[in-house]
Length: 143
Figure 1 (cartoon, one colour):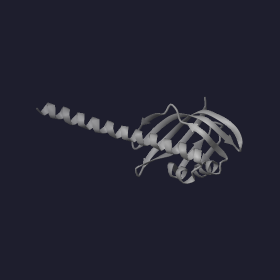
Figure 2: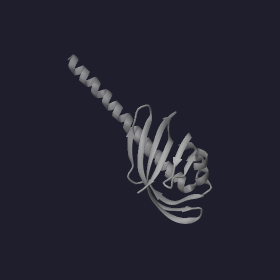
Figure 3: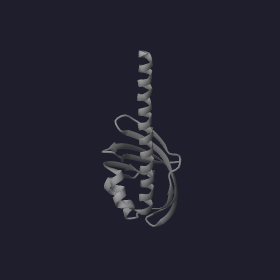
Figure 4: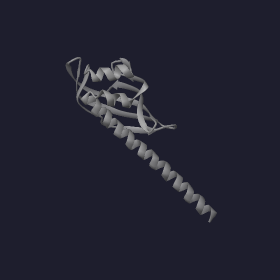
């Protein structure tokens, strides 16, 4: 009986842990969708909410931005996202409320008013702070 109790408690603990992970992953995916929509609509408030104050944001060109530069370049439409998708999302949960997220960005953009298409890879480091997932670091790379 004691052995059965230990097995049941262990199973319950593992399923609770797995459910927490799946909820976090769902929340991360929802945050990515909010980010995608905020990028297309140049929604400054949404971008500021998603970005951590210490954000380091790397472009595939090598340009590096902090939170202010990232938000302002999109909100001002210097980097305009007309239609973008985030295919091939993968989420790797880490300890202490961190996650590594990888995805692609594909679609139609404009850089300083010049039409362009985008097909890049992205790696994000996200951190759960006060119940919200924030982007701490981002690095894009050419495919």
